[in-house]
Picture 1 (spheres, rainbow, N blue to C red):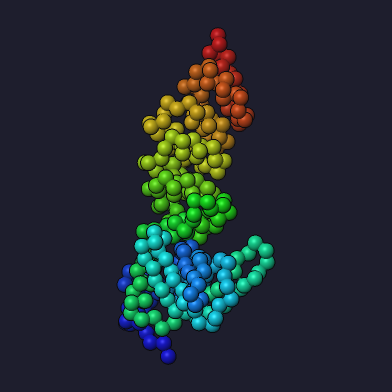
Picture 2: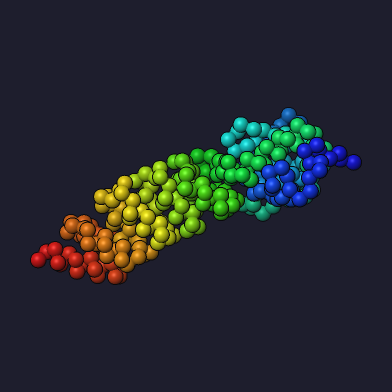
Length: 273
């Protein structure tokens, strides 16, 4: 019989952090599956105190396995023992192998390590799935990592993210994430322009970019906002009224919403008188 770890004794619904014991976190963090002297790199999903789902290009494992879970920033490694609960190897082309592992016989040190790792992930101190991406990650890998990160976490991260995370979050399709990203105080002009070119950018983010004094005189950003189909009409009218004739001509060379084009032509005629 598996003994109950000391950290779990006396706890019912929640742990010491107030987190439900049955909670599964879609971690997406790096992991190693050990087989003899070989360690196969993979990813850990659906992590909880009772088990984890390993995905990647995996070997045929024995019934009892050893694995290492790695914190997103690499500063914590937790080696655990487990038993295979389910395996799906050698699936259809393009699909990853997956192994569901149930943790067994956790000693106090292992349990404390797992507890610390879960606390970091669940409390949002590290964006696990995004941190697990390499610089060469393909677009579909980035989208998968974004999907594996809870929406609330992505929104919170977008408002304070550093350069690398901001680049990844620009590929998010959720308007609330892009809105939070537009309000990031460390956003650069090039990033603001890249945001303005996104067709999924919500009107609230467009208005925030237009109002930001850091690039209020940047013509390219204004042209991008005027060309965006979600720019509110009052904002478009204001931006058009601030453009010189040379800027209006550049604007008319772009694909524009019908009303914006009509008003730009009218404004240019007025300036030519």
